[in-house]
Length: 347
Image 1 (cartoon, helix red, strand yellow):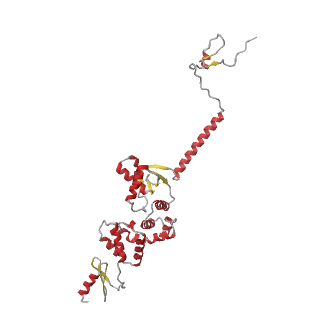
Image 2 (spheres, helix red, strand yellow):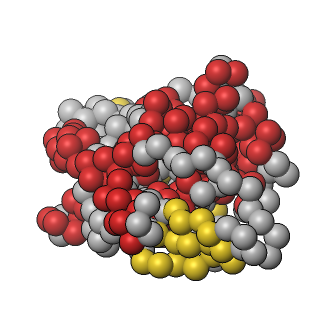
Image 3 (cartoon, one colour):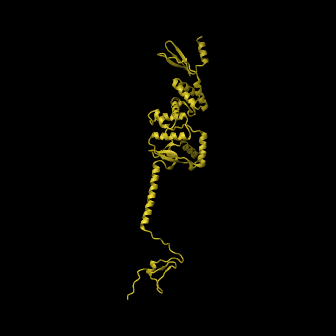
């Protein structure tokens, strides 16, 4: 009877390092090739078999998770929810007309100290510009403080700023974001609020003052918007001549507004008095001038005669003549000047 051939390869003693064959036989080269040897006492790492479908499902789940994370990152970047580190040189701080005119030195010193000790805790808000940079929406104080620190220390740690890249719907949306950020963190003066309303209308962001007030300060009370509106004459008529407009308090500003609207000559009287202070007045001196102008009694207003002409006799003193009358007036028409006029006329 013919001997049956063995269908399975002989066992290998993996732990011993040599394949085991029938007694007294020598392993063939083919057998050694099928069963590689390992060092004495070292067993090979055996991989438990798994169905191919398990690997496919695992790879698909990993790919899906990666795609989800990638999509979320793109979405966060597009929607302005991703905080990015931008170099200071990339940001245009004058992209919008700023609502804040000045920053208190003490507050800025405290902010710089905080940034030095703890780093930037809250990102600023910017918008991408067509030039490839970024325009500042909100966070002017943080950006300014970091810029000052970088100039003072040269530390590269202060050369970048954390920012959220927003996509405002329009210019009005960007202005609202700027105003609300300042209203929440450090309140603006009424002059600064009125100024940004006026400038927003000038820039064409809003069609009129009412729209600007409701758009920029819609979350405020009606009384607050009314006070801001009252400051507009002060902004528009006296703003260019004031050195410390943000220092005007609510009571003084409202009084100035009423006077400007009631007396057409009041603006010129105030401007003339301010010009006498010099180019660099102090806050106290400027406010003293404004308060004094409000307290100065005005001479009764005389109807201007047809054909009357006014000429300046000296700074603050004018003369107006018509066919039958001569009128002398001005801020320098003091009781002493009146006395001299009466003496000259033997009155």
